[in-house]
Image (cartoon, rainbow, N blue to C red; front, side, top):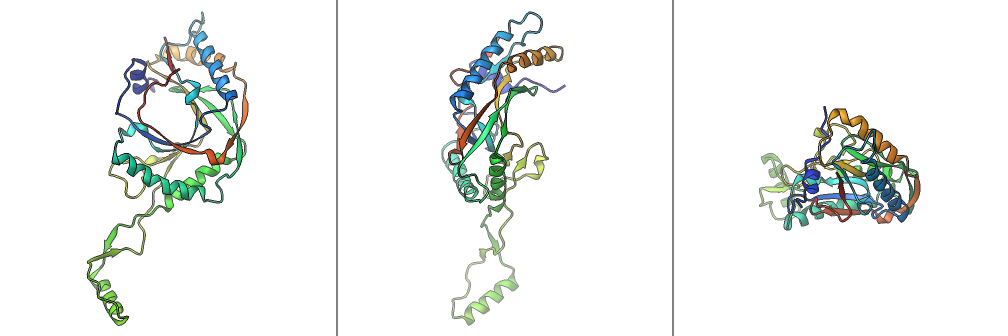
Amino acid sequence: MSEWLNPVVARLASGDRCEGEYCGLLLVCSWPMPPAVREQALAFAAALTAETQHAAQPLPAGAYVYPPSTLHCTVATLRPFTAGPLVGSRRDEELDRWRSVLTSARQDPDWPSGHFRLRMRQPTLEGAAGIFRYDDCDGAVVRMRAALHRAIEQVRSRVPVPLSPSRRVFLERKRTQAGWRPVTSPQTPSPHAQAGGRAAEGGADRSLARPLPGSPAGTSAPHLPDIVHSTVLRWAAEVPYPERPAARAAFGRAAATVAPVTFSVSGGAVRASHAVNSRPVPGSKCLK
């Protein structure tokens, strides 16, 4: 049986701020969400709270509801916050590695240059998380992810590679004939670039993905989701299997109160956001 409990959320719900333990890097769009979306999310949170008092099938304790101010659409997870802390020069180096990738992706012909539409649907409970799904009305998020995929794979490392003895002799002879000074360094940049990064996509095998060249050992590979969504709920306490049907029923009743909303997003407003700590945001609450 899969666990619904999220250990980090459990700590946040208990008041533990997890200071200095986590730092992630996301590429997001539509943050903050427009007022119409935030209003529906706020009404949904109120409906969930009411469901804790339902006589027959109450919402189990431990539902941790995200405030509307945190809602966003993740285009890509460049570094998961669960990878641990990232401070000082390490954070600057990580950001520098990704700036050139994002610049390259924005220059891709597929990157949306104007506004595009998303349609928020009623939320669904996926077990460990409750999410708002969005229809990618114009295919813009798909195109952004495709551009990112290509930009990540095009990153190359220019690590010097030793020349073979025969190649070294050949180059020295050619350069001498051309009037150049002989090669004195035992190494020279390889004319062939090393393999670029590779993003994991959706639920595919993540062992095939790899981080950007030049990343420290143990760095997680980037991830491109295959859905467009915002997380609205996680669990600060485990939900026993016999109580899960009641949890789904209560969530479904609250979800039915949400009216779908279509809204516009600027392609130029897609931004990188780093979560310094996984800390409670004002307005978050754990339903007891």
